[in-house]
Each structure stands twice: as C-alpha cells, then as structure tokens.
Image (tube, rainbow, N blue to C red; front, side, top):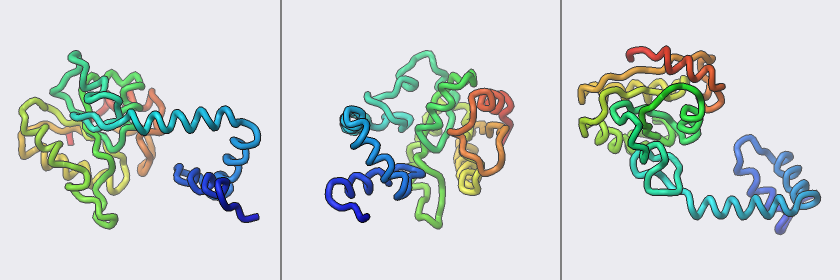
Length: 199
C-alpha cells in the first residue's frame, strides 16, 4: 500500500531521523496516529518550540536557548582549558559524565572531509583560531572522534594551536577505533580524560 497525503508526508518526515528507514517511519507514524495522538501532539509542539527557541552559543557554538550556553556563562569554568569536539551531543556527553572536566568547549559541527566538501571554512576554524589568538587558551584538548576524518581534523587543529604556542593534548580512548564519542559511557569518558596525552 502506497501512502500519500498527510500520512505519506508524515512517514517521509520521520525518515529525516538517523537510523529511521521506510519501515521504521511507517511503524512510528501508525503508532502515533492510532495509539498515541496526545503524545504525537506533544512531540510536535516540543519540536516546534525547540526550533523557535534553541540556537547556537556565541562562544562555543553548542545548542542553547540563550546567547551563551550554561558552560560559557559559568564564571567558575577554566577558560584556559578548551575542549574541541565535533558535535553538541559530545559537549553534553562530556559535561554529564563524571570526567572532572572544568574547562570550556568549542563545537566544530562536523569534521574535515574534503571528499564531502567540508573544509576549514565550513567548520568555522577561523573562530577557533581567534580563540587561540586571544591569549586566553593555554591547552586545547582534542576530543574529535577516532575516525579517519576525526584524526585528520585533530592534526589540523594541532598545527593551528602550535602556531599560537598553545599546548595540545588528545584524550585517551577506551573504545574501538572508528567509534563515536557520544555513545561512550560515563566511566570510559572519565578514564579517557584522565589519561589524555600530549599530541
């Protein structure tokens, strides 16, 4: 049965979520419409509200409702320690885990991937370079993922930091090569931060 109209549009819209294919989208759509219409309305309203209210932090570029995220707005954070991550999900993972990290973040929103047309300009590495040149940052902790692109990104940022006399370190990973940081448990993240090494 081919679904058209509002039902078909709903199924197609659900496919924008990671890991959701045609069958999963169909199952979700039917569940929401048949069994949980109040939940569907709550989901729609929460999504619209989030789209209207959430933007990017002016300093670290993570997701936030204000001009600055709670981490950047916190005067107790150590601004000389800058952790560079690929996504806002990784800021959340590191800050929620018991890593003991009290520095601040910079979110790349991706990683260098010339084959996909993602270079330094797309990642806004000029903003990161300004942070380095401000004289405030003493150590950059490179917490990009251990994919080929993540490693290339770490090497590129290391070279940038070295030009400005900033110490760089790479967090130690207790995870398989090619894994994604946001899916690591808190204990593993804590050990990774404690075991970081010079880059």
